[in-house]
Amino acid sequence: MGRNALFIAALCTAATAQELKPYEDVTNVFRVELPATWQVQTRRGKETLPLRFKIRVPGAKGPVHLDLYAFDGVQLTSRAQARYEQPAQVERWKATASGVSLHPVPHLRLDYKDKKGERRMVVHAYKRQLCRGLVLVLMCLKSDWPKISGGYMNAAQGMSSTLGRYPAIPDDYERTEHAGFVYLSAPGVKRKARKRVEKIVAETQKWFVKLHGPITRPPSEPPLVFLHTLQREAGRLNRDAAVAEYGHLADVGGRAIYAVPVQRQGSRQHASLVAQIHRLLFAERYGLFYPAWVQAGENALFVERVETGKKWPCVTQAWRKSLLGVQLRLDELESIHDTTEWEFYVCHGMVYTLLFRCGPPEYRKAFLAFLKALQAHGDWDRAVKHHLLVLDQAKLLRDANTFFERRVKPVEPRR
Image (cartoon, rainbow, N blue to C red; front, top):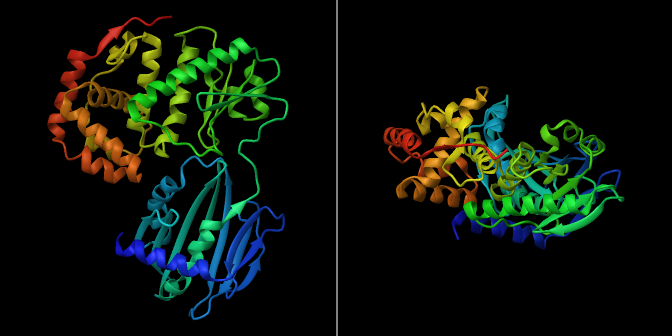
């Protein structure tokens, strides 16, 4: 165990030994526990900010501000959220230093100077509970942090909500389970229709797990599949689902899929459902669904497999004609944050993904090591830099185009 981990463990042990006092919002839904020795003044909250405190901590020079934020349908895991928010928060606070730590809870720490030149800190701690997000934000003088950190980390670990699972499940929906998914069928959905969707979900998950490894799910957050006979019926649960293409939508934040019965194997409707399942599985596995070239490229290839009925590197004739190989090196693709040219971006993702999955052993090995690292620590930049950008980028570009020309085969779609 490193020195920082030992220091945090000691702080949390000390905080746990303190007598704690609970604080709840006016609706008795949100709760945090703070050391009883802290002088706490509760401030008026609002919808997404149910608890606000101004605190005096014994021995601390300045006041401490503590805010609890609450959100529904949080798309990222707590670990991914901390890393995702870091660049924006650094810019917002003009931070002189920042860092993400996963212990004892995922949190983002930022150092900055106020208008008087005093060194201050902002800390964001993240918790995901039943697909809802809690964020505990602390602001204090940097010199006071050693006196505050133990109580704050303890509060972050214990912050909670009595709200149930998001999205809410209507009472009149029939509940069944299959292959780790919970199916919620609206009145009127036939058993045969549900079984067909179950089969598609199970097959897609099996293929995904073969590529990425098993998915660990919190028992309290199984993925949901809401089934409706008519797409417009989904509108009362999710407005976007009522207008989604082919009637299928993944609500990544709610770990839910909205679907209608699939009429024909290999159809675009079938492929659309597979694409939404893949989006959800990718988020479950890695806690994120960005940057786009990996997720979107593989997602498009899942669709191609459905439409061709063939294994990679086969694609439909239409896609093979539109794919012009790759024009950007991977390090150049990595630096793009504006994805307005979406089809161009997805095409690059497809070709690089095919090379990493079906190409020479050196590339398959590097990509698997990248995914393993991403799963282990969740730091995208670090994983890409250590496993993919260390490759000869000019050679990688040439090999991707050679692989595309020689190995990517056009196939007639099944429909």
